[in-house]
Image 1 (cartoon, rainbow, N blue to C red):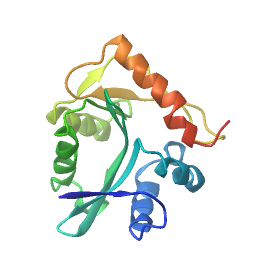
Image 2: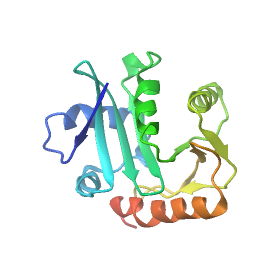
Image 3: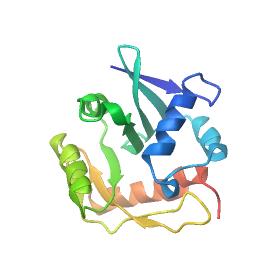
Image 4: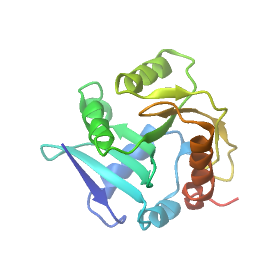
Amino acid sequence: MDRIRLKDMDDPAFGECWQLYSGAFPVYEQRRKEEQRGAMMQPDYHFDAIYQAGRFVGIMLYWKQKDFIYLEHFAIAPGLRGGGFGTKALSMLLDEGTQVILEIDPVKDEISEKRLRFYQSLGFCRNEFKHIHPPYRHQFTGHALEVLSSGGELDTAKYNDFAFYLNNRVMEYSEQI
């Protein structure tokens, strides 16, 4: 499996990645292309296309810091889900040895329970912080998400570092309110 980092939207692989991104996440969790362009120019942001034997299988969009990796968006192509591609791609990121932090929808139905079990099977644990993800676009408000982390639960200081980074760095590349 290969992760190929795209540095700009002119990359030939961008169209297929953007199509998956647009279909895999609700619009309130998506950047507009204008903000995506700015994020892709940042050294700490990775927009990775995932390939298996030359076949496009998904996307992994994350922010890499010294102390943690924030996995902002992760999706496997719909027809390939359940085939082990997500496990393999996420395991590659975990093998980098830096704690990975991600968010999921609150667990309230079978789909969200299955998503939580998937991440827990890879060693992620739930954190009990009340977490509101800021809006990516003007017409929306923040939304509650659960924070998961690899390598153990986050202490308050680490969560605060993550929340500060999310609000002041990551969201710099959203539609500014």
